[in-house]
Image 1 (cartoon, rainbow, N blue to C red):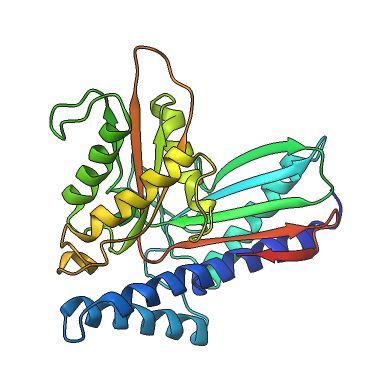
Image 2: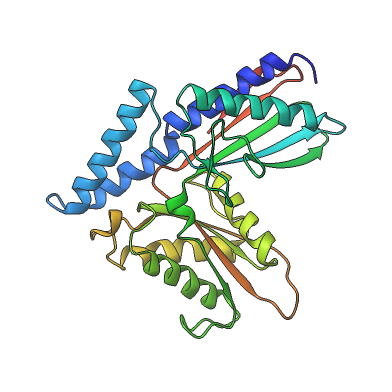
Length: 295
């Protein structure tokens, strides 16, 4: 890995774009949701305000939300790539973005309560690396606010409260239970990422990985694709709506993945992402230059 300043510049630009510019597929989902609401409904007023905020943030180069969230980086790199140097360049880019106001000083020491001035600390930002036969470095960034993170849930099936057995119907009941319990908190309308299976830790990671999918895609597993669409339809009937104030647009999307599991365990993990669905990606060359923006 050479030319570290160029790496830092490219990663800084990824952070800036993610913070201030909602991806087009998410904005389009919000506009479709607006079109479905009744003319004089409160839901329509909220969605119009959200879309005005999206346009304002893009025009003024300011963060979409005051909670710039936890930074979750996923890197796909060539075999043998220097991930230590890449981590250092990313931390430098995070510190720079914080100094320039694209990130809030959003990282707190859990023991002392002290704020980390640069957002660089133990566990911040979060990195995940995968090596493979490739020439470029694929970087994906999710900025996940604390309010939406608080709305996540994990179920161990069978689960009596939502009446969930160990099957896809049980999964459906768990997801709708999590959305119902949220009652619009976490800044609805949002997107849920779901993992069926895994263990407690891998379930949360895989559920969040679903947020890297485009809004218009469907699971390659037909049974899961059908389940995604059914839950999305069912959510419109809950009447929760934007910010929990009533309406059709309770969810913008449902993305479900699955991992293998142990016979004794059947976890359903639900991660919630608010309407400020901040995720971007970029392909970088061997010297750190931008080859293509994703999303």
